[in-house]
Image (cartoon, rainbow, N blue to C red; front, side, top):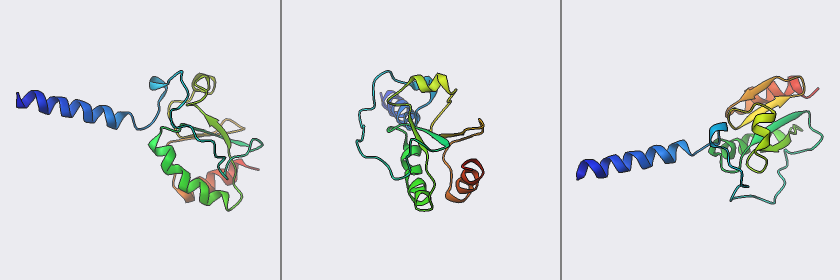
Amino acid sequence: MKKIILLSILVASLFLIGAGCQSKNSQSATPAATETSEVAPYFSEDAKVMYFYSDECTWCQKEKDVLNELSNEGYKLKPMNVGKDPALWDEYKIEGTPTFIAQNGDRLSGYQEKDPLREWLKQHQQ
């Protein structure tokens, strides 16, 4: 009986860990349950770099702090919410969030620290 309980806890833990960030394999046709109506200061529809994210992605939530700091330096990103528009996964060949894609097709995937992201954005926002 103890083995069954331990196995159940292990399976539940692995499920919760795996549900942290969206991936193409876990896309959903329904909008995010935690949709926000606020407009982030780092978003601009005219930005030259697209930012693919999901409201459920824990790494995207963590990336917000970095993006807020970089927005104070003038960096902007075009918002591409894969949670609200699942077709973006296939259209842009997104494999996970967060992902940044520049106009020339260069991409940067996964959580980024401030300094490396700033350097990458500097090269791609000209």
